[in-house]
Length: 291
Image (cartoon, rainbow, N blue to C red; front, side, top):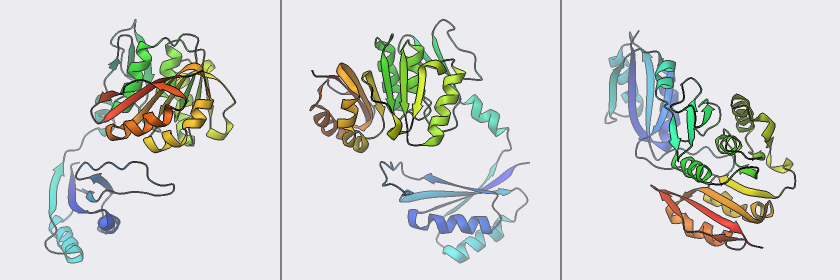
């Protein structure tokens, strides 16, 4: 059965009202999307930010009277509101979503492969991952920057921390590349669950330890990975330094280009920082712990 999509452009402040209106008119689902590529970075705790310009899309069954629905929308929101009505082909959306993920290479030896696909190179280091719970599939520049660093690094028998582990992709990559133990830290219980599941899928559970931030043991890591955001990275700098052994490496990502200097200066109190590695709007910073 085909479906009908009704799309409206609105403001962030009005988006909740538009969402309620579409649901009241019989929409079976409503989605909100960014209309103008506006990043939402580092919201305060408990906040649910929304874009200034938002596209609200209601999905309706094909036999609805779109003229009546549009008339009701305009009666509520005004006659000058642009409304787009379009047919949506019925598909196996789960299959469509699964087919959109392909194996990706990061450097010379490391691949991330969806668990339902066959690895391209069976002799490579293949991480089998289920995109879904929590986040992190390697497709974002911040994650890719860290994966490429791990691919080129000597991780064999090292103690690694993945601070802000998400789905555990960096931790599992480190384990597959030979790390002795990887300590995974995240304040989201879903992220910790996803990390455990992905570690088991990749048969590295015996080298992956998962903790909320307050429960992490006192350790001295050879490699400290932190792919979060600039603000948390700066506020955590002394703590992350204390968890890194002298001569150990720090790898920081989730940093926009115009934030790199501030983050690097913060970490220079404890690390010899290298020039930033840039990918699009994002950078990776690395450094060695001073003695």
